[in-house]
Figure 1 (tube, rainbow, N blue to C red):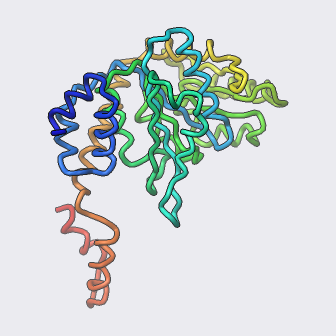
Figure 2 (cartoon, rainbow, N blue to C red):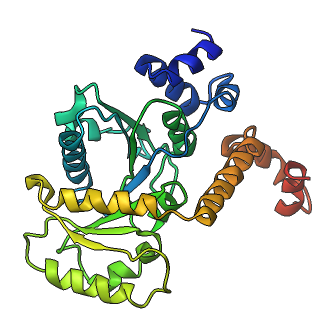
Figure 3 (cartoon, rainbow, N blue to C red):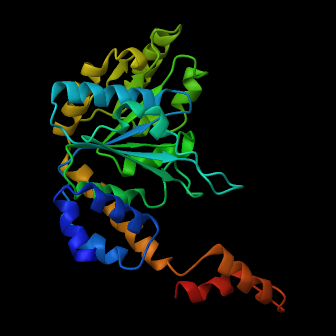
Length: 302
């Protein structure tokens, strides 16, 4: 299938075309940038980030949210981009979200795609931003992006998602320490999952108190309690997601688009530069008299 036909089929809702487009972008195959340039990207589709520490139950909660959404409206089309960590040794990835979300795996209304981080930091794979644009060009009503759960550097999701949900659990450790990790700035909705466990009310009280210290804005960040494996609290969570989408400010969208544009330009300028190539050149240059790394790197940006 030619790139033009592929783009047309993608925008008509063809799932095979969608899978091929994602693979082209993820692998930076020839012509992938032209493909992206041809897309009619619908930025009104809600893009919701799901983040939080490992063990918080992100996949279980997302599974329950999707089930509730489909029970509310049976004709919805939902996409899930699940980012899994890559082994630094084998370069392989478990891609385990397909297993944890097995309830929806064969549901034609739910499209699940796993991505490996391939060494990228910040909880997202290197091509996540571009792939979410591919999804926004397809026929979906909601797009969810679940990050790997790497802790403090996970704030990257806030520059991508319209709504960022931070999932915590009562026994996550020192509440105050958790609040210092940067999540206070990125969360649009706090969710205390597994809230049937001891300490849920204490954590909710601490987070709520910390939120009162934030500057006044158009959005009051809610703190919700859920028990995802029993489906408890899902309806209220969905109501808050919808409310936040309606509350989106134009300046926020511009800031996100500027970040997106910066990443695209950065990626294109760095396209022909790799650590392996730099290492090979340095292996020769470093032996020269008066070697200076700043002088060495000038040729790459002047």
